[in-house]
Picture 1 (cartoon, rainbow, N blue to C red):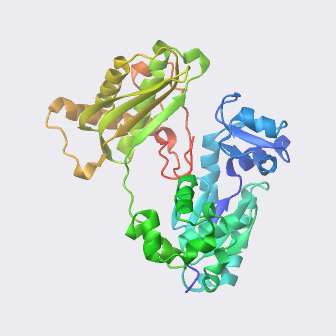
Picture 2 (cartoon, helix red, strand yellow):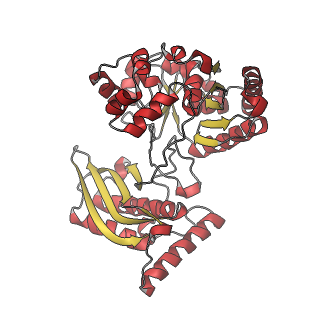
Picture 3 (cartoon, helix red, strand yellow):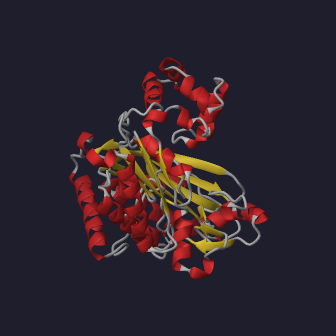
Length: 412
């Protein structure tokens, strides 16, 4: 069984970019945050902060208890996207990138002589040297394995700046020193389910038969897929279906009234609708969720005829907003559900609806040609800078059409 995949994982990516661009941060514990406030969370941390026990997603106030010297760096998504593209170019010059897995990870399928451990190590050195040319403080770990999952696991085994090969001849014993949660797809809830079935170690996991794993996963397809992958087989991924598209924003203190928050809600609809058209889907329902400052949280859902134009979607969101006006809004989420691909949707026969769709696409073209928010809805006047670009680790934003969909891992 050959080595089929090479996986590149940038180390402490957001924090390392900040330390690269700001030398004063080098060697210091850094937490990257969306806003500089004690109530926010660290979306990324440097290795210096990790050594103090700080973890990604940890609230700033909690992180500072563990690491009083923690330095907060305001996130710069545009910069991370810029470096991401430079990293992809570096890898492509060494070995073709098969799939961009996230903002800081790419997977490469190996062929021919590339499948030898010595050639893979040579390619790894070339990739690492190229990354250091982007910035001398940037590092990446490279993993090589017989399938994509094990190549990713290998990349995580030595950080930072590591290179690891999982030889198929050493499977499954090579995996026994790992934790269950070291495998992509096994998070806290899946780990708890494994524990309920008496599986607490990777050695126990690899001793399970395909039928036993099928009972654990509650799916014969998933159970056998795991059985084969743990033994090095290259089992293709199950096709995924997009279920929701949405955006959310924590309001700054000066906008925590119903009147001022309205413009932010309109902007969230504007952004999500542009994303909906970009991925060529139609929505059948609009859900507006408001978290109040006192901890109360409620949602309103309004069905719409399958559409993708901003105006119909905003009309539904506005009706939901009016159902229950917030008193002290803290966070707003707008989510489109009941999605169908455009190829499966039946366009409206009403001329007005067709015109709204045509106008929405025209807005997208203008904003792409002349920059974000060159054309926008009057309801978001003065709020164009709210709800700025955010990066989910599984999605690379494109100007104003970035999504916060999280298919796995976490985003912000």
